[in-house]
Image (cartoon, rainbow, N blue to C red; front, side):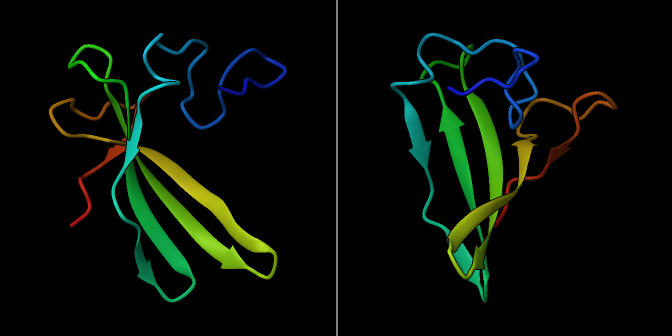
Length: 89
């Protein structure tokens, strides 16, 4: 996992990550609409360690670029400090 100069992960908005995340990353197939694709990523294997994300990418001339990463709400309610997005269809 890559951390920024402040010691936090830009996409996860977290300073730490759980031990089982690096070896346990799963994704759904991307749903593409023109030059935009969205997929869901799950980090971790246990209910306590799982962190679910919605990733939106845009195709540019030199390849796919991450445009937005948001936490998937699932059972965890959205808060002002931790916004989330509903599970995509």
